[in-house]
Length: 400
Image 1 (cartoon, one colour):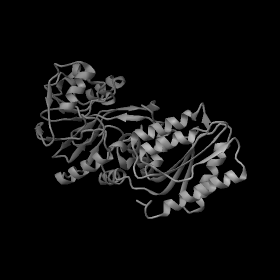
Image 2 (cartoon, rainbow, N blue to C red; image 1 turned 180 degrees about the horizontal axis):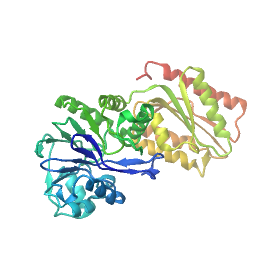
Image 3 (cartoon, rainbow, N blue to C red; image 1 turned 180 degrees about the vertical axis):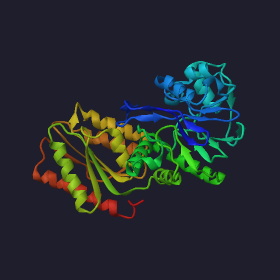
Image 4 (tube, one colour; image 1 turned 30 degrees about the vertical axis):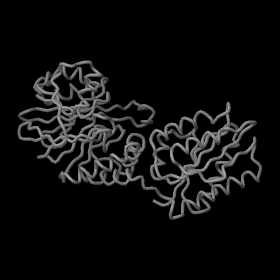
């Protein structure tokens, strides 16, 4: 892609990865972008880099504007390799006077590239650097989502370069929020939050409070992945506020896997019971739905209901994968219910209960276990479990 001027003398010079389909367990079925930003002025400054595979593309894009060797400063907001992988090639081409980063980022870059002689210039929250007619203010955002993460704010342009915050994985030829479908855009943003940042929701709340306290006027937010927010950047800030509070609605997910359709029949009966109580319900088979899409649905769901048959004295592998992934992201304020079929031992339900307990999810009783193929009476029990779940979703305790 050619560079795109996002503000006067500020250019997107990133790369589009149309082909990537997995981002460490997150389904990127529509690809992603790696955004980098070149600020022209007295001190030409490059903010962030791209994945190593796109090093030549980055340098070629920069060369359409200026000889890369003319760049004075680099700013590295985040050391993860999708943003820093191209740094060795960039350093070789640019040979900058200074490389600005947080203290944790300096350490991470040395651990990644074993280059202690790069011209590191460590900055802290509130520190400002003049780049000739423009002022960059830095804001450390530790553990959002790495210890080294940092924002760069260009004061005169009211531009926030926000690293991995407020971004999403979506490959598009368009660069701005007003050029794409809003529903799709916010789905990708919700998916990114649910699968990358949910674990750090408490820190997100603190960050949003800090941004509000600093009273930074923001006309544009430029994240390191996806679309740039230029028409109403407040919308994504509001969404992060909502998601980080983990507010939920009267919605249940019935997540299941099945061997010979017995657990699937139970799942359908549970879902019917939830629906009859007027709650929203989604039936999500693990053979058809990726874990990262399920986590996106869980972002505003109050109830998570899981069902698995027993295999080799435990739950099916796909269910264990799902619950392990979910536990790592630490959703809060949920209620749960459990069911499953078995042949001769039936440990799956108890195993799923252990995961629920570790996540602090209150499980609705009774848990339902059925031997082999469910009878009508068994399906009635599943239906009643669904009704109890639906009723719990409507109670004042469950709301919020």
